[in-house]
Image (cartoon, rainbow, N blue to C red; front, side):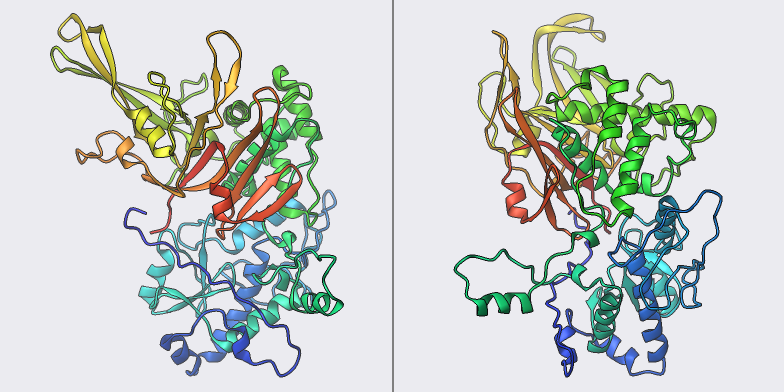
Amino acid sequence: MSGKKSLPKSKVPVLSDKKDGTDKLDFVTFSSCDHLKKLLASPAKDLVVRNYNLSLKVSCLAYPQPGLKYSNMKEGNHHHNAKLNGSKVGKKTLPTAGNGVSTVSNIDNKKLLKLRSAAVKCSSCKNNLSVNLICLQCPFVGCFNNRHGLAHSQSTHHLFAISTFGQVFCYKCNNYVSDPELEEIRVGSLKSIGRLSAAPGMPVYPFMENRTPEAKKFILENSRAPSFKATTGLKGFVNMGATCYMSTILQTFIHNPFVREYFLSGDHAKCIKGLTNDDSCVTCRIDEVFTDFFTSSSVNGFGLTKFLSTCWKINKSLAGYTQQDAHEFWQFVLGEFHKSHMINSSHGTEPKVNVNNHARSSSISYGSNDHHCECLTHRVFSGELQSSIKCHECGNVNKTVDPMIDLLLEIKNKSTGALYGSLNECLGYFTKPESLESNYNCNNCESRTDASKKLSIKKMGSILTIQLKRFEHLAAGGSVKLEHPVSYPVILDMAKYCTNTTAGQKVVGELSYELFAIVCHIGQVNQGHYICMIKNGEGQWFKFDDSMVTLISQQEALATSAYLLFYIQHQFP
């Protein structure tokens, strides 16, 4: 992680569900600290407990819950009650019902998304992409990534904050802490809104025929079914007929925090095509997918009927129910993101984007002369690839920089036929100097001579997408699939594959990346099936197989035969 600290990992709690006489210590999931004990023994205890209870309600509203009730807003009716027990947090007001169950009435889905994103937005940088911490002693909300929460703590001496998952963080200890009384409040609050099943705990396992009635009773009393409704955006897609290549790519977008932020912030809500009921905008169709995934309480698979129709209308090669290449479809969608941005920019309906450390612009352009495009594709995915050709006669180095959206890596050496067993070996082969024997015209010494060519990455994007070239085209015609296993790390250090990192010249973009999505192809070249593995914000891995969503271990995810790998820049300090 390049010497950077990461947010401490949560221990998995097992919550007791006894009715009366329950020992408070049964609820504790983290150890306490002297600072928290001292605060709770001071006159400020009542204020802290009250703020903790209020902050829990805010954190529960920040993500879709089974207890939330949604009703579509009738056209023209924009009024809604926005009080939360008469209190405000960060000058933002949130709705609740008198019975303690959070409700949202007379508000449409898009307004609900904006309300959620505003609830836990950093007071300093307005970031809500990652972990934000709500101060327990005042209404300040500070992000972890940019250390605004820490800066607030240092300036005010407020030591404690609550994360968006309801956990207490001590800035002095730089760790999560707990207390029996606060933990009892947290569990009680989760129960009151029907969200206790969202907390980590013991899952219910399928019954076996040979289990005794006593064993079955014991399991039912001490286990619970995991609630997928409480996991943000956790839903599959119905296979409409060889559409698995679409659904896997869409899952990588849904669980990409930069793409998710774009759509949930309503940045595409004023698309000129959407406002005129033009059904030829792929980005509008994806916006509808995000709206359903992050507002609907249903966990049934989403049908891509409208999305399919729009894609077929724009790209005739996608029409029909035949299997397509997932990587080519990913490139198609990125092109549509750029195209819709250009159309909306020309009509003045695309919001201006503040390009910061989380998303940088690039020089790539899809037929545009704008070398600093602020579309979603350029800001999130683009980088720059440098080609350096060194003349062996005079030593002159000719450098060319080209736009880069992804890396296409060989897993088989073209010269020797050797197969590479790791991602780092594939990257090493990609950036290894290539000999150009007597095949280079040097403009400096004006001679035809030997030279060497080397590729390196000059600029890194926020997301690094890698294709492992498993489909090999044969000289005699046809193609074969390379099933050779290639291992890939969770944390990928790109420093040695970038331009002049050893010479002390800073490469644009962070160089440490973390794996968050894997797309796999199962089967042969002309027939097969796509699945994907996605890691959510809490570090849990899920396997998406059309409409089926399964919780898996990291070991199982890393053991798959990857076709596409998606890495995200480290943002934690």
